[in-house]
Image (tube, rainbow, N blue to C red; front, side, top):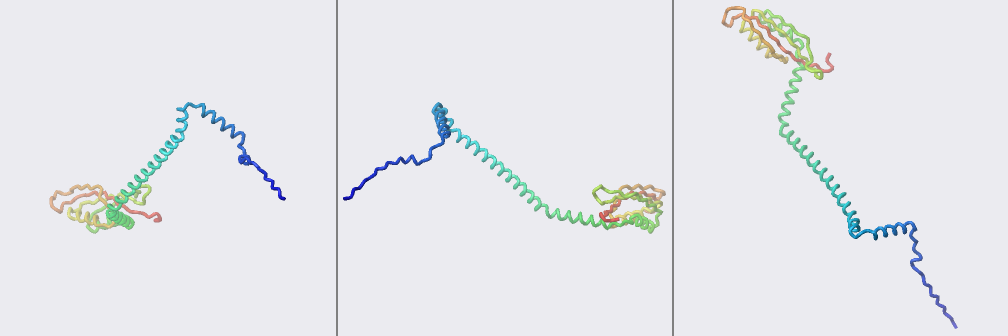
Length: 213
């Protein structure tokens, strides 16, 4: 004969869960007490506050992003305008660059013996000439261009031959320009054989390379 014994065990499921810390329970109790103490209107305002903060913070981020986009658009537009300007003026720029380089080379190749040239040209035309150069000086401190003033005095020269002398000066490869001209008649003739005394102030330019002596 078998005897079956059934044991009825009642287990409280909550007994297996960890208990909350006492400090947490106290904090929750205080919060609940303060919440219950609030007026309904205060509860609504307090509940809305997080959403209001989110909206303000989100609006600020949107403003900064939009401001940055506007800045990028403005810079892009300026860059595009600059490219358009370069494209429109590229041909003229190349021409000016070529002229500048040609003048630079002309200044480098300028004849340092310009005083001798002026003297010989006048002597070949039969002039009584005096050529007085002044000390060269730099056009600016950061450039190698030298400017030299040259005083040329011609005595008892024919008007026609004087014009020939001026043409020869103009045809020189060396960059040279007339700054001042003073003519005084020394005879009473009114023809091309009129004798004159002429004083000319010329400016000559030459570019010295940095390594030039």
